[in-house]
Length: 143
View 1 (tube, rainbow, N blue to C red):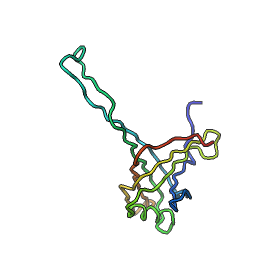
View 2: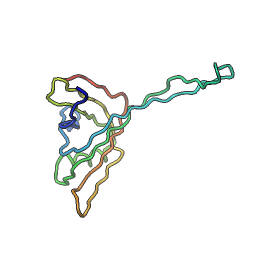
View 3: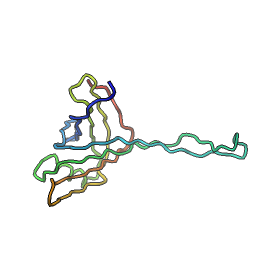
View 4: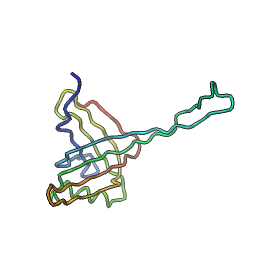
């Protein structure tokens, strides 16, 4: 098989701080984590063949970006507002292929760095949300 359908992917937040994860409703697009790693240049006068040389630097857990069909009355959408306002990190999960034998879960702590709402005249209300990951995100086979 060349690929898998992502329909059903879930974004969850720890609603109590004690591991009680709740699905954030009406997510239409989810991307991430978009991890990165720095490269540190170590080129010297005696580097072979006049090519720059690099070593590995610090890693960045990246971000998870969401787009939602926004409903201001939905408790999970209201919770994202509260997460944005709080000072502490929160635990989140991204569940890929839930219920499938190949289900995997990303676990990470993070903070909401961007929360934006749109109210177009001829389309649905939308919310975008960016969660900056703090530390190392962990991918686990959970299916």
